[in-house]
Amino acid sequence: MRTHILLICSMFTWVLRVDVQAQIPTNDPEGWPHNATTPTWEEGLAAFSALAQQDARATWMELGMTDAGKPLHALLIAPEPLPMPGLPGVLAARDAHPERIRFLVNNAIHPGEPCGVDASLALARQLLGMPHLPEGMGDEAGEWDADAARIWPTSKHRSWEGAPADWSKALIAIIPFYNVGGALNRGCCSRANQNGPLAYGFRGNARNFDLNRDFMKQDTENAASFARFFAAFDPDVFVDTHTTNGADYPYTMTCITTQPDKAGPVVGDFLQNEWDPEMYDRMHEVGYPMSPYVYSRAEVPDSGIVGFLESPRYSTGFAALWGTLGFTAEAHMLKPYPERVQSMLNFLHITLGIALERAEEVKAIRSEERRRIAQADSLPIRWKATPGAFTPLDFIGYEAVHEPSALTGALRLRYDRERPWSRTIPFYNAYEPAQFARVPAAYIIPRGWSPIVDRLRANGVAIRIVTEPEEREVEATYVVDWHSSQQAYEGHHVNAVDSLVRRRERVTLEPGDCIVPTSQRAQRYLVEALELEAHDAFWVWGAFDSALQRKEHYSSYVFEDTAAEMLAQDAELAAEFSAAQIAHPEWAESPDLALQWLYERSPFSEPGGGRYPVLKTIE
Image (cartoon, rainbow, N blue to C red; front, top):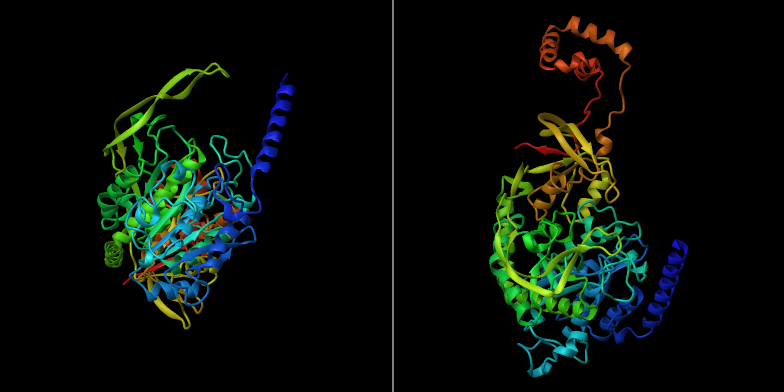
């Protein structure tokens, strides 16, 4: 019987795959979007690049390579052509018009969640369809046909409700496919719980990394190419498009706005009290009410949802390090694909519209945030949820039912869509700093750690290379105890500090050593990358593991005699050892610990053993 079931399943999968392939257009990129299909990487690139060929205001450019051996692309839309190609052109356009709002959309970081690709293509067509966008619905754009628009607005049918009034004040960048390798790994069935499209890409990239965990550690070429572009473009507003899984509820769109407490008192207050209320109101007005990302506190949303603390491994957590206003748009997996695309398009319209209307305010807030960071003597590097703190949230859900499973007989969860409810639930979105780090005038990275230096440079960090020996008083950190995760996560056994010691030392910097001043735009990024106790510091991801491993040791039976001679010749050391024996009664059961204590105080102990390579200047 089991064999027959497997055979039937196999036949069904084969038939489904054939049907999917039969329905995917392959020769008409201008025909997108379609009801239940999304373009392949090749077809999508053809559609986006065609816009640049037809309109000088659009520039199609390569940003660098990806792990798939193919380039990462972006479409830039500006009121006039870029003054020169590549990243220099992006920098020149940015610096020539600092007053323009810079708006970045990133798509297909998880290519199985492609509604942002289709929505961004529609948005680009709309932006280039006329010199300026109309003030509202109607007039130049024509009346908004809700039924047709839900299928997709194309160049022949536009949905302008909530759209910006004038994009001549903007520099807009769209990355169609961030995860190129995942987009090329196309199939029908890796998203088991998702309602379309018929075929799509895979979550992992060419090396099976989840790229939305790689922004800080930068294991991938994708992340390095993105970082170089992000540093050059310096977006004011950043949107990362996704499709969420989890609970069932009526909302087509949910959103993760950068956690306001972690964003800081300047940006966070603006996001929480000014931007979000307006964004949610406008989404409701265009017929797509929106909820914060539904990360349920318990099994179902009824008991409340928890605000997502996106550390710098995530796209919007990374963007927050630079004072960028970040939004992760999460369309709901169970809604029909055309509805998800339309909802995403409305979200892009509205966020771009708010950014343009509040351009001066957004610019001023980012400037104030940078002043705040520049003046800080210390910065938070870890956060924790504020116990019991929540705000009331009006939420619409479906009744959760637990009933016997027809498969296993155990109780299973089912959401009853015939029994919607509307009530106020708690939204736990308050976080507070759990740890601070002193901001030095500079960090010092010894020569030889070129992968770290390369990573910093990819993010636009200014670095001074020592050319002549110079003495410095520094703060050195010694990692006494730490542990690593037993299970690999995103290519690493991640590290956590158990105990450490900080000491003042006098060191001589040698030619080739790197001095990284913190008085630059990258200050917050540097602190959270190089303070080893930060959530996503390079050390957490194993970048400095080799420095913490001793390369020399001793044989106990030989060192016993050496240690006895040391104690006989050094009365002060003998007294310290006696006191240590009293303080550590466990040594009686583990004499090797006592011998290790003596070894570490001997001239044979490895110099710098356990010392974290990154030093901090002392002013």
